[in-house]
Image (cartoon, protein in one colour):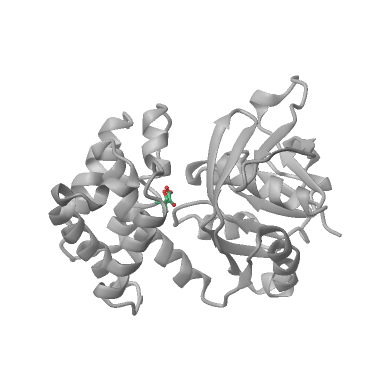
Length: 297
Ligand code: KPL
């Protein structure tokens, strides 16, 4: 049985730790420097049914990377490279599973770890941090993993224990496509809700109809350029359904901005802008500038 080491104790990382551990899977948390010297506090998970459960995890620090057998990366997108580079003794056989939001980091990860199996993934579990070590699982989601290099193909079996613990996990040979589909949703909901200081569901109010229509068209255009075959009507239906399902949530970008943290605007909207070429994307561009200004960089 492998031990799952989770790097990134944010909302999603803590929910994954909780779901894996309650299924008897060994879990360790790779902690950052600010936790050094502190007693490792117990993580508490509030399940979908509202039960509070203590989660058993083993604390690890970067210099103990030699002990990591399977690494799940759930840090903020802009922390991925820095955090991974600190794992100098990570064994070459350890699979690295990238589950962070946003895109555009894969080439750098592959260059840093040319021998490790590298898996890309997407997960749509809803999670909310209610305290430093208290996390609420707010929605059951799907998790997909796929190979980002040849070595990763031998790791398809990892989806089985994940599926048992998370309720769903699958293997996809088109993981880039799935990441693009998720990014497209995030590129509409996240900057709009952060910029207007609203919950996801408020995007369906008539005052946002025009901007939602234009932004979804711009995002769809770039996605089509990247090879996505989904029609605009279908993309809008999928978008609407995510907005409805997460209506009471504040998006992760809204939460980051609200708490004065750096957002993932560069890895979401920035990624799209970098791939738009000559396509007109004025709303995307304006939101990008607005969020960058608000986060102070
Ligand atoms: O993934 C999300 C996020 O907030 O980052 C959505 C789907 C928009 C839910 O809030």
